Length: 380
Image (tube, rainbow, N blue to C red):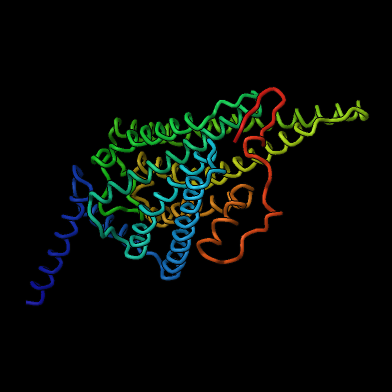
């Protein structure tokens, strides 16, 4: 009787494990080796208690900081007349995409890291994957638009970005990103449910059309925009160095000739604004590149996707990618003067943390007069 009961217990566990394997990865022949491999993968998905505590605390801090910081950016840009400029609208759209990414990804990933399984529906898994790529693509598109605008202003001496064109770029970025990521919501490419990673990711498949979609998604949403941004920044750095050398040579040759004041203000302000965008680019590339490359390798290579440490590596890379939405508002506050002034006037009226700045400390310059180029007149 004992042998029959133990054999029946083993048969029930084995049959349930086989059914879960068939449900997760269809069209794959289930063997005894596959069952053992899935059991080992489940053990690999269980994080240690110190890692669970560390990830939980870190993700809660990231969630609060990204949600509050990006919400403040959006509210101040859309409700303060002094912040109504093309660049600020692009930054506000970037902040909105980061806020949406944080709300739709971090809570589910936190639960999955702690429980080592996806406790939500299959539809929510596909929607979470679609929103992850959607928000990431929109954020990269905003950085691309801002970088090209800096290139045109500093290198070409042309200010082409207006409020109307900025709104068109924002709408076009959301539409293009939606069409790129919408197939994930429909179930193609297929996603493994429950996932082998904290976030619903692209599953491995030997299908060539599947590989083509994955490569196209990675190229359009990440690699091509970052290559264009890098080329733009290289040209901007070369132009800034050339202008600095030319100004120093001109001042050394003609010490008695007075220099116009508006030229130094224009060059200095454009340089500070460029280095702010450069800092955002470095942060975005550092945080997103490992996750995109790892996801691409996992979707193409079965060895990477079925590896024992796939869950833990994915957890670390997701944490790294979530640092960008949390740190972007801090960069805005530290690098953008208009943002600091808006915070000084807007935050006390809500939180009553400190009195507003005195009138002597308020900026008296008009926002439209910041860019005073010698050839063109531009505004930010």
